[in-house]
Amino acid sequence: MASYRVAKIMEDLYVLRLDDVQTKFFEGIWEIPEGITYNSYLLTLPGKTILFDGWKKDYSDDFIEAIKSIVDIDDIDIVVLHHMEPDHTGSVPVLLSKMRRQPTIYVHPMARSMLASFYGLKSSKIMPVKDKDVLDLGDEKITFIHTPWLHWPETMISYLEKHRTLITCDVFGSYSVPKGIFDDELGEKDIQEYLYYARKYMVTVIGYYRNHIVPALNKIGTLGIKPSLIAPGHGLIWRKNLDRIIEAYKDFAEGRYDSSKITMIYTSMYGFVEKAMGKIKDYLEDNGYKVIVHKYTDKDRPSISEILVDADTSKALVIGISNYEASLHPHMDHVLNILAKKIKSLKPVLLVTVYGWGDAAKTLAKKKLENTTLNPVEYISLKAGTDPEIEIIKDFLEKIKE
Ligand SMILES: Cc1cc2nc3c(=O)[nH]c(=O)nc-3n(C[C@H](O)[C@H](O)[C@H](O)COP(=O)(O)O)c2cc1C
Ligand SMILES: [Fe+2]
Ligand SMILES: [Fe+2]
Image (cartoon, rainbow, N blue to C red; front, side):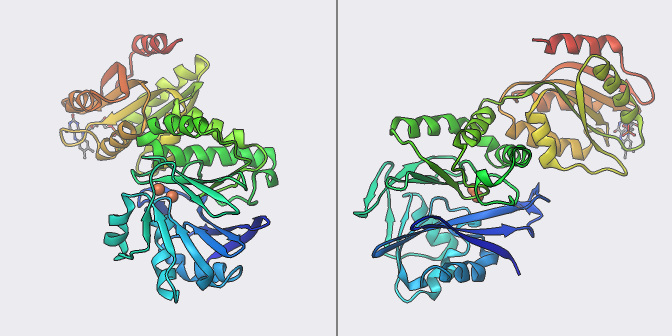
């Protein structure tokens, strides 16, 4: 039985939050032992009930039960779907199938064909909305703002004028299942931890599209919107320190990093790469750097999500690769593909390849990093068992100095 919460945010606005601790790999890839929440919102204006987004399909029964704890499902007049990804829409067709009269569904124009293909929904009551369209409900006006690529091309957010509330779906979202519903229910330590999970969410889910964050924030700014509440589709609702999450998203968009941090990632089958990496790590630490290590060995299998956060928040990377059947070790091939996809600002790299009889990985790794943001400013090619040249590490540190 899944656990969910229903809470009143304001007089006629509710959050319905599903706490998902069952998903091990979000999007089938990102490790999330901290869990994730899906937040849906219900606005109960006199004579008009509006539902914003849903939950993942697995939780459809709970979703309907949660709605019923506030209103009759047949009281829902309008459903707004901000984003078609099934973590927010999967439960909606199940809800619709249980309703006696169909609500009007407001979506981005691109979402219409997706509703048809994903769920077979082809109602004449599906209403595409243009950027900045306003739905005037008398008592409340809802402005729909298109936010393309945050996270898909059809993503939008809503601004509730009277409630001064932005309902933002993936934008300003985060992983984890926070103890409280609102930011002011968490102490500073918990907020810090939460912001780590927010960065993890941003890098893994929005990383590839991060250039779209600043234009979206600027667009919100030019509309003269001054929200007093940010209500995302994942994680905390912000009502006290809205700037914390806005700044966290800006930092991420700009690729802000800790200038004393270096992330070291390597594969090591029998310990030769590990030995070389140990020497490099000692040297970097002796020079005042904090070194975070993620390694693939016969005993360790790191979290790719954590590799991404550490790489994104580091000044530089050290990447150690075992030659494997005239190529890169397959794990490193995978890691480099993901890093190149999600990291959007230039990261200097010390690239180390270790071989038994011939260094094919060196050429292949260099080639792989061409035209990516991973910039191998120094290379070390080592025959297994030999030590890395300190001169090259020194040059690397010289090159990454500000
Ligand atoms: C399965 C396997 C495949 C290998 N393939 C190559 C290769 O194609 N070329 C090469 O020069 N060395 C190859 N080696 C040797 C390793 O690349 C070399 O020993 C290196 O130091 C590995 O370091 P590690 O044990 O820390 O991973 C291979 C070793 C193993 C175990
Ligand atoms: Fe999404
Ligand atoms: Fe989402």
